[in-house]
Length: 480
Image 1 (cartoon, helix red, strand yellow):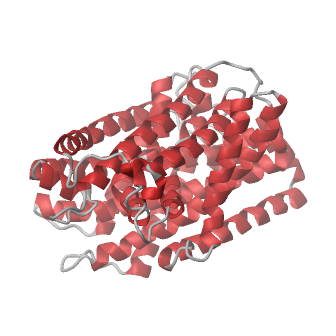
Image 2 (cartoon, rainbow, N blue to C red):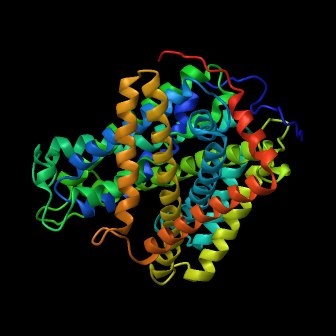
């Protein structure tokens, strides 16, 4: 391995294309988010979930415009780290990077856990054996790790292949349900925010809708590995928001008209596939969810290992994390993510029991709580980073008179701050394990604050050097 303060990532010079960058950003996981998170979203805004998704997409698109604006100017592996350093100062940049790394490490660790909880019952139902959830989690962790260690060119292409295959059965289901009119007929009423059913709330639904988009900016961490980063990264970010926004809106519409009715069909795409098409499509839907979760894991492992690499390269994390393999992969940083995933699996097992659900679903449900805690923790932290980035973007782009991006900053800030504020409002605040995740998120923010204060007091030269490294990237305007 090499450890050079000026080393760049990637197998030789940057070779990734816009399509590869989209593959990385698609770690937002449209199939998994549609099937799992989308069901939660629908439960909070039944009757108007497509309208809720459109409103959320507009807000996230605003945030995407801010990130795209920054990506036109700066193109290092640190991504948001560098954007903040250029706009509101070196210390803010370093602190934002630390928070971002912690959030995406939480997401990265949580993904194999939920993957194990989804894969175990699938094996029991269709493959004739019933492995424990934690064994599935460890196997999937190994697969994700291997693809990342091979190199980012392989991992992002794998993500694209997995995503394409996973979307096919969902596309079939959507076409059939719309053609048949679902359970109650096609209607435009669900696109009206005021059509929400009693007890529901568009704002409650938006909380889960925002979570569905988390990860759309992951391609920004590939700046040093992309052939034309100042063109490809902005295009990838905006394209990802638009693509997944359309997918989420269509699938929410299909779920809205396909569920309910005389047969009381649940908002479950696997069940809907069986009702409207047949068991074979239900199997493919569930397989697609599993494959997409693996794709998400590839993206989050890649993203958090690269931000960890960027911080270590600048002396803000232990130096070994800046070491890279012969393939120019941040291998040590990646191994840390792998180790934390194994640790998270053990803690989840100890906290929520090791029961693999052979006699009931209780063990799997309990294990899934580990995912809920970690994802809630990550969402709190990353939403605050998003809000800070929007503030930075507002002041930077208003000077450049980039009015559309300025408007995007306002919309993105409203979405991010609204997501965090809602966590503490009566009637909207989470309970149970989600509340534990919220508390861990606040603790995580506190840890990051202590971390930056420690370095400012004890190692001010490192903070200065870390911020200065971000400022080295040439500011060059490139049109989309």
